[in-house]
Image 1 (cartoon, rainbow, N blue to C red):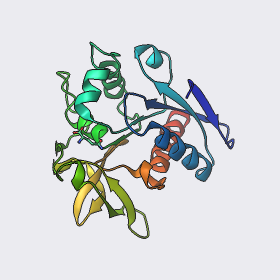
Image 2: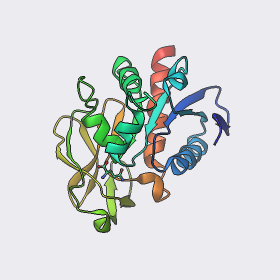
Image 3: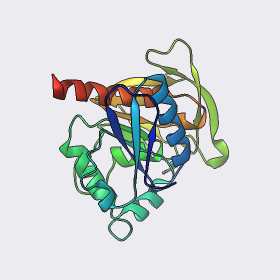
Length: 216
Ligand code: GLN
């Protein structure tokens, strides 16, 4: 993939969506946000975030933080790696309305950024709490405002051990697996791998409502 892709449909606004390129199913997120862009009739430009330089002046309207393996992501994105994570966390903290969609390891990073600052989502997670890689599974997730459960992919997924502060927007077997705090959406699973666009649509809607607030 090269730098910036603009997709479909005009409604006057182009949302700049930053896609963190450290690890994980980035291409699947790209497809999901493009599909969500069409479904919401909103033009989206995907900006790939690899290093601090990609953040500077990017004017992001939303951020997608894919899963992968959080230890690896901390190393790759840390100060001895690309250096992206620290400035990314600062960008999110400084823009309290910034819509963020974090999946799986992305959620682990938001809950426990380990940069000396506050958690970016006020929830606690237990890594790999569903078991080992072989215990990964696909299961029905009940999602707020969805008519029926959506099959979602849990890959060596974390579990929320404390998610009392954010609102619960997705449950599996009655257990919270997706939370939202302001415009920060954190999921323990991978919606981008099962074709659903509902969470990417939420991200776009959140970004549009921030824009509407800014122009009101
Ligand atoms: N188990 C991984 C971790 O601890 C997360 C897995 C995932 O993102 N699919 O980082």
